[in-house]
Image (cartoon, one colour):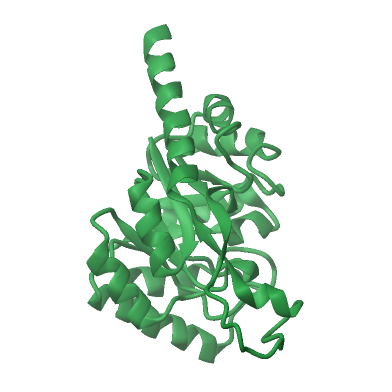
Length: 256
């Protein structure tokens, strides 16, 4: 079983590995669903981690229909990821009609190989998920991250199970959204997936070092005190999910 942790920042990346994560998805701006991290961040995370590192390729938040200029940025970011020696890239491109943008997806895939390719939850807003899935099979992506077109993977488990059956080993289905230590085993059992993607369930709020003489000014959105804390991955919480998955595997093996 694979437990992938979605995160932002070098401290979170190190904590995820310490907690037993199988792989990380490195992003920035998680509140917007994740965007491409900086070149410096990618390079240092790759240097510090021994587990696979997959990098988000997304130039902005919002929808998944990109302008020509935005697509050019994505191509350059893919080239950067390849040059920095990461293990995979993560992206999702759609047409205005809500279909997979097959042409542009193929261009990015060709630029990224031999890295692993994950098509992310852009899939979850496609107009016809089964048609979109067939497009991904034809393209030859390695992995699909999905919540089954629902807010959480638990709610979307029926579609996830259906996709798992249709995949038949041709690509990996990775369930994501709303997965934690208490529901991971049940979701795996219900869908048959071999990979899960976890995010906020692995994090905690960390208070930074406050400068006693600093002025009380908010930088960015929210109240001033929000600038004194940050959300980071907790190795302990990652380990709880990893252990829950391990216990499920042991139990399943004993009952088989």
